Structure formats: structure tokens, C-alpha cells
Length: 251
Figure 1 (spheres, rainbow, N blue to C red):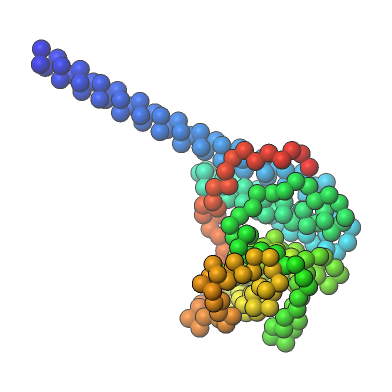
Figure 2: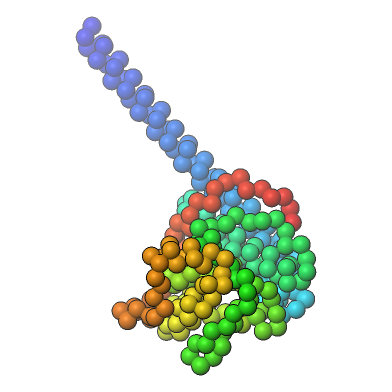
């Protein structure tokens, strides 16, 4: 009788463990499926805009070209994605592309479309609310909240190489070498430091940025920093959970 009870108890425990294991597997599979569906939805929305819009001036053409780059990158990431974090990175890339699309539509005088999910980095970086200019290495770099023939390179705001960059239109895409890494990143870091010092006060959330970084931003380069460091994002990096269920309707 005691042996029978022991067998029954052990059998019950094994059944419970197996049931919980199946439950965990189902939950993980569900999360993976949700992350993939979310990534494909934003990727397809970006594709619809990129393929159907044509720029009417230099700022809008450049913004759409940048959006097309994000669309290509998101497509490559999507082909290789096998985990939920990788699918969330696809979502991040596609959303960034849609920020460029909104900028292009604004430059052409069109309805920018529905608001997009924000991020903590963009919130901290803020946005330019006045035209500003800084001198870096003998050249003038300008930024403005509105596009113009001079300021025709848009950046949606965020952290670049550890520096907060306000959203706005700039006279040159100085941040690209920093994203690619290599020797060119050094010059980009110098521009970023000067821009923060010169543009930070004119950016919405500029005070919040300074406070968030300890109240004192060092406008100079860290002498110990390797100019060849690659601040780029690993395709397998967890781009952050943007959450599911964003549905703003069709553009």
C-alpha cells in the first residue's frame, strides 16, 4: 500500500512538471510569434510609405532616402531574425524609418500621419525649437526645427555615441560616421559634443538631458576613448520591448 502511494505521488509530480514545462514552452512560442507579427507589421507599413512617396525637394528626398535605408536594413534583419529580441530590433529599425517618413511628409506640406511610439532616448534628447549654429573644426554646422535648403538632413533624435542629439534638421549628416565606427567616428564625436553645448539649450528637454547626465556634460573628447570604437548595434542586440498592440490605422 505504501509503495502504491509513493508511485502515485511520484507520478503526480512528474505530470505537474511536464504540464508546467509545456506551459512555459507555449508562452515562449507565443511571445516569439507576437514579436514577429509586430515586426512584420511595422516593416510593411514602412514599405508602403517608402514605395509610394516621392520627394518634392531636397529635404524630403533626403529624408525618404534615409527611410529607404532603414527599410532595407529592417528587411535584412527580418530575414535573419529567429528570437524575440531580434524581431524587436526589426521593429525599432522600421519605426526609425517611419520617423524619417513623417519628416519627409512634413517637409512636403503633407499630413505627417499618426503619431509613432516614442522611446526613452528620444525623450531625453528632445528636439530643436530654434535655429542654431556651432563652429566645429573650422566649419559651421547648423540645425533647425524646420527643413530648408541649408538644413536638409533630418535626425529623429536619440543617443549617438553616448551623446544626446535633438531631433531636427541639420546642415550635414555628421552622425553617420559615428554609427559606422572607424576613424571618421572621432570627428563625429567632436561635432556631437559641440552640438550638445550649442544646441542643448535650444532643445525641448535640454535641461532634462543635462540633469539625466549628472548635470555636467563634458563637451570635450575623453582622451582615453578609442576613436575606432564601433558604437553600432549588434544585429542580435535586444532593441527593447516596444510592446504590442500599437495600431494607429493605415497611413
